[in-house]
Amino acid sequence: MSYPINREWAMPNKHTFLVKPIRELVNRYVGDGKGWVDLFSGWNSPAEVTNDLNPEIPAQYHLDAFDFVNTLDGKFKGCIFDPPYSLVQVSRSYKDIGLKSHIGSDDPTASFKIVKDKMVCHIEAGGYIISCGWNSNGFGMKRGFEIVEILLVAHGGGHNDTIIMVEQLVRDVDLGELERIANRMKPKTFMDIL
Ligand SMILES: C[S@@+](CC[C@H](N)C(=O)[O-])C[C@H]1O[C@@H](n2cnc3c(N)ncnc32)[C@H](O)[C@@H]1O
Image (cartoon, rainbow, N blue to C red; front, side):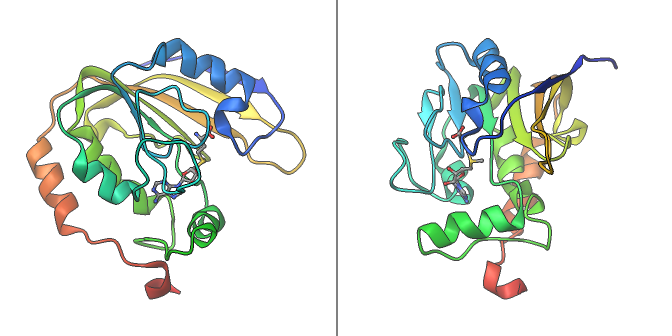
């Protein structure tokens, strides 16, 4: 399987979609946002359905993504998946609003595995996931996805690149089984593992 991997340079910004090459990529897929859902939407999401834990952010819902995916009904054309990228960022998000964070292991990105498993059940055949982070794991083959393109955005200095994965749902998976596994895995709290 081959897919384009492009590399751009841009100033870092905690608002991911204000980074020009990322905004351009997102706009290309999301268009007017109809049929798209954003689980960690921040201030600048183009998606029709938006959720962010922080109540000060102008999202439609202010739930923990773990709870938000359980409220979804039906299928979406695509999902934007731009969670905190590190343990420090997870901890900061929760402290900002005075909650404990849900972390299933020492790796904060692993804690969002359950959210991914549940989200797959709400993506239509041929639908897209756009994931942002510091790794290129995305949703992956096991969840039925194929990589469409990857964008690496370098930020200079000691910054990590931001890695944007675009994936398409191309294969049937046993969604019921994925959901059953996800339901069995209860996220532990931040305090439990420290
Ligand atoms: C990397 S930022 C997303 C930025 C957004 N895409 C933008 O361009 O502004 C992560 C966002 O996730 C939110 N967040 C952190 N933990 C969350 C959780 N468990 N559930 C839902 N939102 C969460 C934070 O408030 C923050 O706005």
